[in-house]
Length: 405
Image (tube, rainbow, N blue to C red; front, side, top):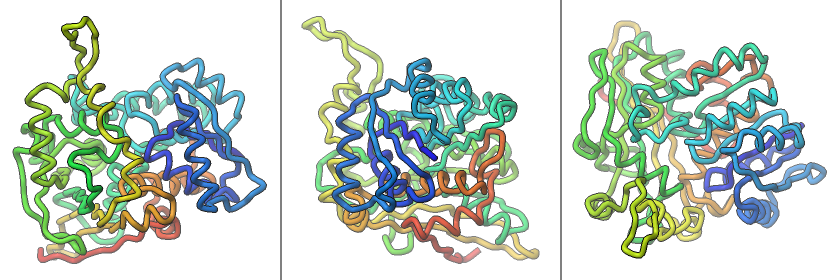
């Protein structure tokens, strides 16, 4: 058995550690990235932390430009993996899915294939380019599992579990994501700056009254009291799982909320106002053509470098309202993750940990056969009980908070 992991950023770091900790169940691990040194740094960390369960299994690294379909097919044919786990930039997902179809191998990822703020890629049509592969995956007899991170990912599993066990009908779903930690830097992103800042600056799309509604980013705010981490301001924003939750819970209003501190928004607004968040190339006075966002990415700290000094906790979950046995009910299903504990275990901060661990859960469920069937699926369509039973064993607990209805 073999897993080919494509991607060696923060999420790839966490996923690789977790797969190595469970390599008695998934077999050999091959990590591929444009930059070989990043793969080897992860492998060194895995060995340093003693996170290889079965020393007879191998962990190796190789270079790959995942946007090159032919090169990816060639690598898949050479490695002969049972599963490709893609944790690279979201805009390359479709190329990797195409390669998996051509090579006849199953696929898993952690986020939607678009950047969510480019024209034609907003939440109302997010996933469309991936869902177009449904018939091909089914006809080829291979499995595709979309969005096995935390949000998207676990928050949608929470909703599927709640629908199965807690509600007869669900009226509203509010996904809540708060990072109450501190990395000690004036401004930094917790994962790839291009993906992060493209996502954050897009208009918010939410589903209400059976239709899409749209507002500019950071213009719709509420204060919420969270378990463990306290009260935080959260802002409505476009996010992957809003689209898939609307697909599978069409009678519920759906909105995504993320916590932003005042200091973060101050830097963000200045950078946006002066054009530094633009992905569109410009030509400088010296004749150099470059995208401002690429320059900013080069200036900001590498997300994996934040882990060592990170303190505090994250709180991410799904807040649902509806009815059970004719009575109104409101619950918050959530996880608390500690940055320092994440670093102690796998030398990663909690943002990467909370995304990489669920992806590893998805991989293990695929290998166990519980999440393996021909076709392409979002996590909302798969068995939530198996997922939530396994997730704590891999490092992420979860709880249900009853709220006044």
